[in-house]
Length: 597
Image 1 (cartoon, rainbow, N blue to C red):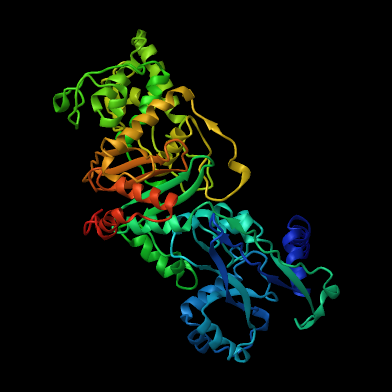
Image 2: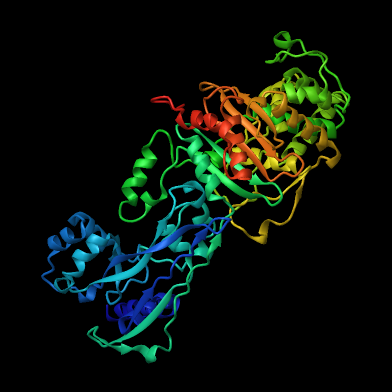
């Protein structure tokens, strides 16, 4: 028994001091030294014009040093003072002592007990600290927002999870980090570097002075300040126009890919997710049926409908399915297999098809492109043309996540050959089978961010910079499409005609040549969605935009005026007097039906 006991102790000592040396050294060091962590100030955020957006305000955490807590400890009085219940106190103390949850725990080291006290709670506790031995306050900073806008883009911060702590040694229990948006994407730049000072303890835990006269102290380094690409005036105006509606707006500067505004509605004031009330407010947002936490600009997917037609034109021109002089017949609502929703002459020219949004024209163009080489044995030639069509569409940034600093993205959908093989059999699908793709319906799904990027690409005549929300050189490289630059002029002219003579003619901007395309998108779950894409000015594009208003009906009635006003506000910094009535109509409209899903 003596030999076995000695062997067990030797094995355990070997494991602690050799195998698990880092943890052993940390615990031993904590017994002799008190390491105070000094949290850095988080980096500040500014808009593209230098307007201050997000700062820091002072807050206090309650720390507990277990070895210094003296009994009797009046737990109930302490809980009343800081505004918590005893169950929370007991649970927190248990977690602090649990080395699986709180690695490197030492009873000699201050541990986070309660984060983010309010000013009132801090004042109440400071007057009673003498009663609660082992309790201290640690100063740190919380986010403070100048504007209640851009919550989805800026993002939020919150307490780190155990997974984060396990994966990054920078963090410890109770630390804060970015949870979404820019705060998450640029967490390492914004968080800064922690500082430390070391105090020497005796065997009873009493402070004996600074260790080595502060030779090993580390000064905290504040986080990096970032300049966002958004224009807060445009952002706030977009949120004003979209109030009372479900949907989103994304505006991009074509020349750089910088996001000028990203609106998602319903939204929320980011300041409600700061401090002790964050958990309760977050729970309310999660349970809200309108889903205000969902960034509809990047996480909601829609069929693009007629806003897809300019891109369809470019791809069909590139593949030789049509040319500048191609004519196709249209019989209006009597057209088959896809009817036209507009009344116009026949045959239809390419320019007229864009201006009048002629569905039959795009069905014929799509079929001509896919069937130009026939079908071939086992549909080989047809499928090769479909795959090339799909690849060309994807080169505009559709059907995949964009390389962006916006992390909360979904990829959308462009169905593959394999998908249709599973649906209809390897020989069972033809151009007629997938005809809905010709007019941006069917299986095609896009996000508003993708639509805005596609529009910027058309404005640039064939290239784009990855859309991004922070000014950085990372996104300077141009991404080129598979479509030759020579094909873009006719599409630009057609989109200008849409806003001059076609479905977008009612929302012209005086003195500004606007190019755009309306879309009324079928929705299997309710009323049609209202869409619009556009850019301006025509010959020197400064802004490209995509607007989606869910369950609102015609694109020309809702999405078009939102986009037109946004463009006018950005370019002119005001709305002309003769269009104030349009603004008032949008601001006062409530399109969110009670109990709507």
